[in-house]
Image (tube, rainbow, N blue to C red):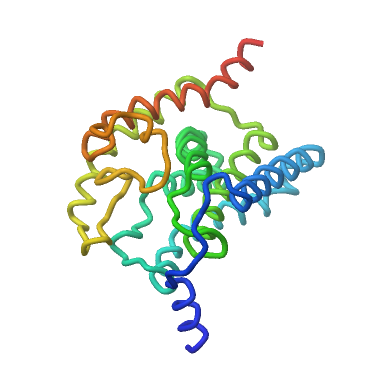
Length: 252
């Protein structure tokens, strides 16, 4: 009980070291995620056998799903959060679920969503994280561990399992995302929350506090709900760039 209290106070301290975008710790963390993902995947590719790696893939699949489901309890217990602003239904959460479900079922439809939203939104979250403090603050650890795990899993799926996406995959990712968007907005309104702890699923109620591509647009388009006007076409452009390597590969 005393240990839990100490952890809670530690993570709620105001004198944590401020996060520096592309500072030493940020770059080292990105380097670790990238190098581990690539080295492990290309090494595993040499020795890959579906039966041999089946156990590992199931563990990874369950890990992707379970960690996102239990993370809100950890954040509320040890961080400055309420359950209203930790509902695990952000796009990156859904990307984690669908990545895990693909590993468990090998249903390509799950990977279509996982790749574009996981690599699109997830990579942006790693490059421009919405955190105030650096390691070992709970926000930093939570964001980079969860998004890093999704990145690792997707690289593994592409390199080792050799699961690819098509232009139809891109269309499906956009289509289902747009279909779900109004439901996410309504869910934000239903959940509500006290000031400072309001639900903000898909960043529909306000844009990220961290640096993002939206910051390059006029202030008018950075304010809700007008930021959605920029986010949708910007997401599609990012998806097209993510699809480009597979398009080139298909043409060879």
